Image 1 (cartoon, rainbow, N blue to C red):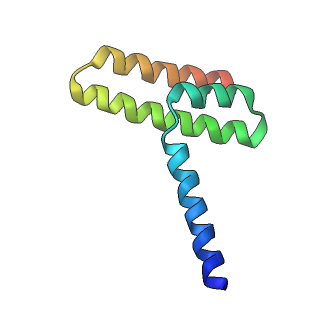
Image 2 (cartoon, one colour; image 1 turned 90 degrees about the horizontal axis):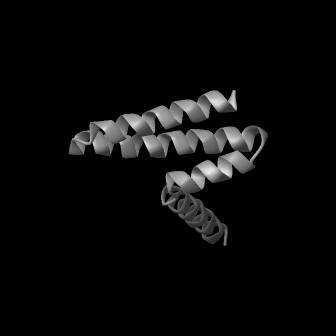
Length: 82
């Protein structure tokens, strides 16, 4: 029985990570704006990570201007959170 509980817990944790990984930067930004305290900090970091990964892909594709614009947006979001 204990094995089944551990497996179920692991599956739920993996599902939560999968759902978090599929959120768009805009969704994460909106959630961060609505949150407070530690939850806001966590969501801001997740937003920054997702946005910077997307910016990296844009740099790789050669769309430098749009990539830099997104990085500036992440910096502005961080500065407004301080």
